[in-house]
Amino acid sequence: MEAHKITVAVTGLNNIDSPGPGIPVIRGIRESKDFDVRIVGLAYEHLEPGIYMSDLVDKTYMIPYPSEGKEALYKRLQQIHAKEKLDVIIPNFDAELFSFIKLEPELNRIGIKTFLPTLEQFEERHKSNLPAYGKKYNVNVPKGTEVFSLYDLNNALKSMKYPVMIKGKYYDAYAAHSEEQAGVYFAKMSAKWGFPVIVQEFIKGTEVNVIALGDGKGNLIAAVPMRKQYITDKGKAWGGITVEDPTMLDLAKNIMTQTKWKGGMELELIRDSEGDLYLLEINPRIPAWVYLAVGVGQNIPEALLKLALGFKVEPYTRYDVGKMFVRYSYDMIVDLDKFSQLATKGEL
Picture 1: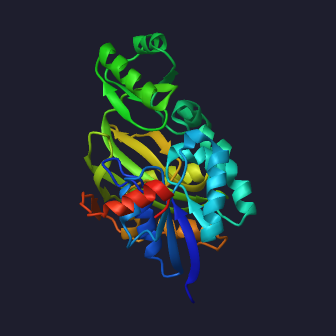
Picture 2 (picture 1 turned 60 degrees about the horizontal axis):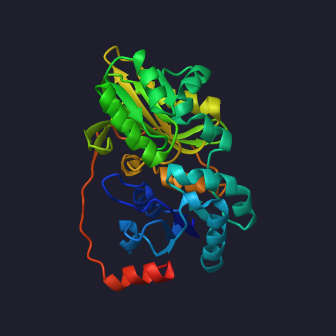
């Protein structure tokens, strides 16, 4: 079979201490034997390292921040599409997904495919909706509440034991050991991500994650569980190891079957001392550690691409257990004129 020539646009090129999933997604796509791909990077910041990785990214365009709204984004995507003839866009940030989901019909009309959850699926798994989600789908979720003010926060804390987790609407989570500390983290989270801020009971245990891909019809196409080996101060896995864990896979399957989730997702879980699994959050996209899944035999970015293009995809049934990923930082030397060109023209 000859490789299909396609052009794929990818966001999330920020390979920093809280890395975006863009680069590992691109690596997975590049390893596909079925596609001959031109990769177009979509960047928000001029210093996202992926922009300058010319062996992985063929061309980069700047796009407006999600806060500028979906009309500005659509206008920019039309300009890029006119030059690049995009076949598929894979967005990789939580904060931009709302706009991309809303634009799905328009993008489809001009010939650009995406493979994203519906707005209902996206909304119901928000951190603030997790307790209701747990009840609906029969999943253990730590007790939690949304707070919109310091008054709310102090009220919530009265019935909770320390430490408590203070979580941002989109990203970030801190364990607070006192009311003062909770107040500091509340201010930090609300300033950065807006309201609500989530206060959640702290479950002591082992942090485990599952990366999963759903076909939108209730089938689990791919799933790889891992245990975090090394966690940064931002709570990001900087090293992880694949584990054999039927209960984690069953949980992923149960969620996929019931929700008919469409696209990639990451389940952030904790296993307590009794061995029970608790769902801490659902990230509605492919996570940054996706290359571990590729490396153990499940090329999730390639499968997502095939689903977006309407190809038949058989579910993966196995993966290698006991394989690790370790992240590292790497200095690239970049000509200043490349940076200037990007800043003035909005493309490189």
